[in-house]
Length: 79
Image (cartoon, rainbow, N blue to C red; front, side):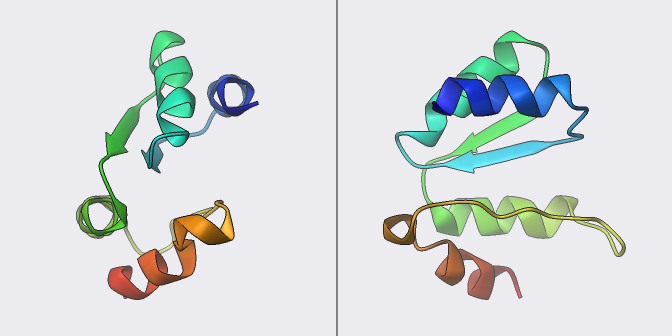
């Protein structure tokens, strides 16, 4: 399932894919294999820091993750 997400993201023109966590590494691997612009981070703190450096006003950012990945807390770190 995760590899299909990476493939879909690249095939549908996603500009940048930022992932974190063990399972999300499969998304990053597949997207990289297909030429996507991808960065995989070790944890949500690193991901929030990366997001802070690349996000611009007007960007559309989709956050997707299971409750156990604490994506809501990553969003708080990004603010």
